[in-house]
Length: 229
Ligand SMILES: [Zn+2]
Image 1 (spheres, rainbow, N blue to C red):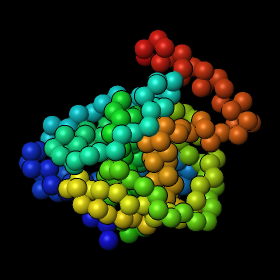
Image 2 (cartoon, rainbow, N blue to C red; image 1 turned 180 degrees about the vertical axis):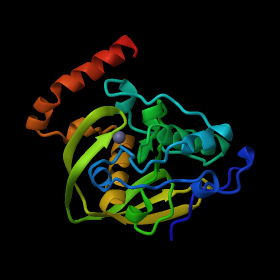
Image 3 (tube, rainbow, N blue to C red; image 1 turned 90 degrees about the horizontal axis):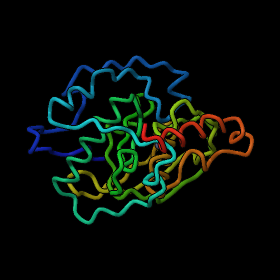
Image 4 (spheres, rainbow, N blue to C red; image 1 turned 180 degrees about the horizontal axis):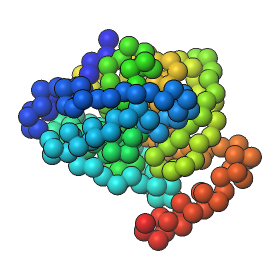
């Protein structure tokens, strides 16, 4: 059982079910969904606006080259209103960029929090979106190789080897202990986001050949961060 994102009384929300917030058009472009973790092509277009209307902020996504992406997240000691606000802001920020996952570092924060929203067909029966606080992978087995992207690495997509199935434990936004079991894209997304919380990035999964192929893009990203783009 996976409990969903909890109450947001301060925002006047009783539940964080996106279907209750806005009409969600899930026109899946199958290839892209199979290919990209952070590139959300299920046309959640406009959903972030529903979150913004409820006072949630769309933050700029931190790009590769920023030091915060290398920080190890700090476990959340108490799931309070500040954390629930962070979760809301992260969801709004993720939807604004059509991502399927986002970690706190990607909006410049260091709490051990990530959010995920994969299309229902690939959600392993888990209700989306998922907010994972202090997530930990308890079990991992099998293997999958698939193309992966990351909102902090615009236009970079590489094949990444991941476990096929994972079981993760976490706290939900009500502070309750939960567990989720996932395969396929959801499993990949969970592994990708927990990587972020450990300061591990897409670039760390690159083979030497992939690094050479993406060297120009990576260099431009770093330069952009230095310039303050
Ligand atoms: Zn990422």
